[in-house]
Image (tube, rainbow over the protein chains, first blue to last red):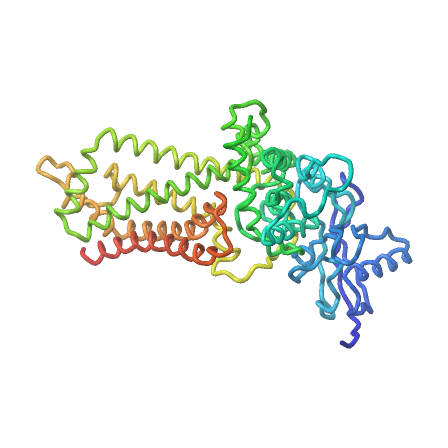
Length: 254
Length: 250
């Protein structure tokens, strides 16, 4: 694959703080290698801004290999850019053409307030996890891994849910800013395993209650989340969440 | 705009914040619970449509047959009244939840994107039928109001009910009344548009309701998806066929 150099117009959302109104600013960036990742391209932009004495663009990133869930960005109206099953850090500049205008926005959801530029506060997800996305275990020696048998198919379903990296692309892509795909993945991964069963009812009720409290929207089953998800979490998990919720509503003690 | 949305979403917000309500209300008050109620009311209304279409297809069996069916239905008296009240309650619930969850959803994204695209495949309607639920729902509601004025109250403006009148000048020939309404050009238009909107609404609504009730299985999803769409358009086409039949027999 040959290395081309791109000249790009970047329309970037700039916002100095949570209470600032914010606006788009356009930057011209030349000589962008097609081998760069999208985040490396932003690094280059920031080098240029610092050299010019401007404030660099703030954006979230960490592992830069698609597993940590820190990177975000709405790129030309697509969560994590135009590719399927890809995070922004895995997106390469070869997906763009010379002379393109690239619009970069933060995730937009009332539950994800913008902290600065492209950085949003996703701690709402942490609070949903804290409300029930765990199994309580006794301290002591680790139990024998084969003490409780789990059918292979169930392991796979749990693993598919556990693939969620909590990046928030589902919320960002959903027209209702609903967190149902995230919450359903976190409910599912434990609901299908015997280790998750003791707290099954309380888990789904508490996590849904927290999801509502954070101000996420409701699910209209458009499947936009599934299409945007970099971990390819399926909306079948949302159906499982709904089943778990119905079951818990009918059976839970109070 | 924001203030209006907040006001509209108040019932849902208050319900979802009040602790210690009866467990049923508590369950129904979350976003998931509201969508479950939405699904149940929607499927109930769909069940009514199936019965309504089955009854209306008696029009094809002739005047005597349809009028006998209509008289039998009307002679049910209190049972029919109870069914109508139930039906009205389902409509009220369905529409009420649509407004309240819709407003809450707008509040959930107070600032919109400058550009918003999709990663889903192309669909006939931009954004797919799921993006048109509110619009098609409102069209169906308008059609429904016309429909009740025309067929139930029998005071549709511009409709010539003469063939359906009895000796006392009261409309009592249901077959002729239906024919008179459906063959009125303005009604043929409104009903057809309303029924196409209904088809679009149901083509997302039925499958979506099943998903909300947790019905989703890898092995059956494909066939279920197409069965739901087939049911939606069978219902719409069945009713539209009666409009065509009435115009043809004018």
